[in-house]
Image (cartoon, rainbow, N blue to C red; front, side):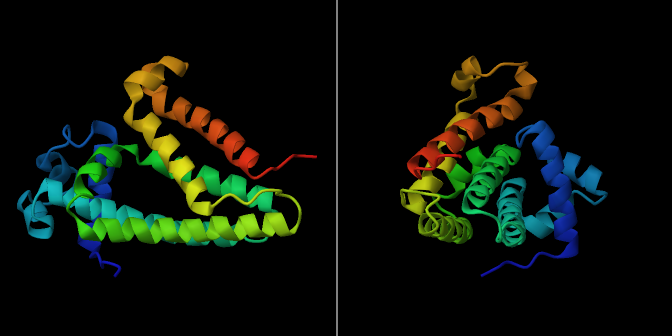
Length: 208
């Protein structure tokens, strides 16, 4: 079930997300959030219980917004050729994973004991996999794709490749050029290129 957020909660969550994206979860204090949101410190506890619980709310809110934006995005590309749709779907997920990379350590811990996070993620993954399956079937039917890999395997490839690079910066930065502060930007480009080549190879696609 979709959780309803009040306008005040959404305001606080948006402020918190900007700060956490810049300073990290540990580097962002409740006072930082309350000051930037122009609220009393006690309001964080009132609305969320604690900073840790607020992060859980923030992640749930972000997943809901991502599902909404994905639905709009999928509709926009719906009439495109299968190869274009597949490319854009891959780019969408890789981009979202890197854009919100600061969530992933938190999510790994919270998923172990927070049921609603599992449900929210399951909803998005199921929707995305269904769309991938639809594109594969259209591509095979039109002769553009000669193979039909399982859509869940494609999702696993996309998410697994992205999360490995996000979580293993100390290793992968050895293979990414540019200054350290540009790591995620450059790593995203590298992952995107590799995933696109791999997925289209699995599909048996050959550009004219």
